[in-house]
Image (tube, rainbow, N blue to C red; front, side, top):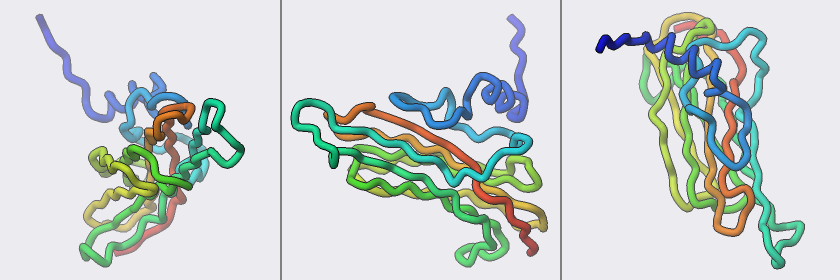
Length: 172
């Protein structure tokens, strides 16, 4: 049997066509939380999206909603690791949740140059992740994916979102 291998860029393009980078998905996760290989033409600045879940059952009230909001910070010259460009992504929830999983990605001139591993933090109301590359002059933009597992009794039980941050010029 002959096996054909795809380049990473080709695999990412296929995933994007199959919905691997779809916007917020209530009640589940994106097909694949990997960053797209390129920034889609006219991609809006979406700071990362938000998701929410409400308490279900007879004890639910209007206050029993947990909302989690993602933020893609502006890429910048790192002060922690000189000579690199860094982007930080954060998620903040209005109450603790069981899990928050995040992934950060960094683009230079519209091309994916690095993405983080998935990072899962448990029993928390906030989470963060980052991606970095060696600095070379260009226009940089960050991207994030996040998935939240809400506490028992909340509906939907899980939700996810992703989005691009602002593009900024960086010189080294």
